[in-house]
Image (cartoon, rainbow, N blue to C red; front, side, top):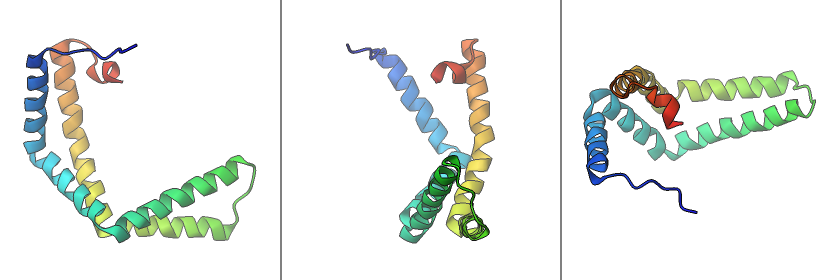
Amino acid sequence: MDTTLQLPAALHEAARAFGQAIRADDYVSAYLEARARAEADAATTELEQRLASLYDELLARQQAGETLNQEQRTAFYDLRRQVQTQPRLSARDEALAQLKPVLADLASEISATLAVDYTALAR
């Protein structure tokens, strides 16, 4: 059964215009550019993927009852520090930190206009 709601063309157009206006914002464009730079660098993405994989592995071991030794913990913290200090990743994360309040303000404006909690309904 198809439960897809067919929105009126005017709402689609309004959503596209809203998205374009948001994309033109300095904070949004700064984040998108920083994210693109990080994603374009293979070494950067590999470093971030290694951290995610190591985290998942160590978490699974802990959940299976294994106690991580100092060497395992140190390897994780060293890799995490490399990710946190990698210039492209830190620039992306900083741009995202600056963008989040902008998006929260936008969500509040939408909620106020609708007179309902937009973010709760959108989930």
